[in-house]
Image (cartoon, rainbow, N blue to C red):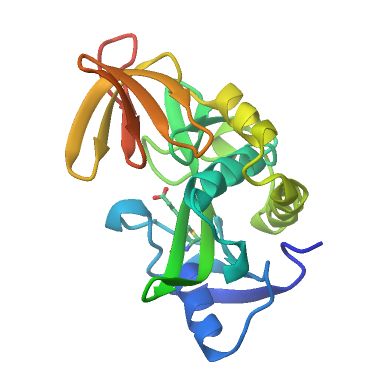
Length: 241
Ligand code: BTN
């Protein structure tokens, strides 16, 4: 096993992503090293958001060595992590582009998120941190947790399930099989969506996910390839979520 061979556990920490970055600066880390914590006091989400991290949830980060990084790596990581986490939660899950794991339960609700960060020195990638948070216990309204859908897994029981799925899938990073599975699970495909990408708002029908994990959006002006961003889907009621 490469991913999860070494696991460093904390009772409480600011952010497991930040701890991996600190540890990696102190001494070389083994590829696949995991840091996990019982709670995070400054958990971070995508786009500068806070990731609420009270006790009872699962919070962990995985260190990936620099020689693994290549163009399209970020998109491939998003697809690989999404597919791996979705297969591990003990309940049917779907994926919302780019990298949210969602459950269809009175609408589409997010149960897990990924914050992938590559640290550079100049133009040279030093390493990548994959941070994953899973809502295991009920948090608050409009959020969904595994507990809410009757899955009784503790964070300690869930972590090895996800790590072993990631370890199994990692050799297939960037492969057509991972992309195909991602597309099967992706709730965006065929749907009308608004996508915010680098401050621009685009609207259209999500027609495909490219080899690199980018979204192809059929807009009024033709097909646009969107590299990264945040999608909201238009529901049957015409509202976006
Ligand atoms: C998102 O959907 O916005 C991404 C959420 C990522 C949260 C995880 S929890 C473990 C790791 N440490 C952090 O501070 N963030 C990630």
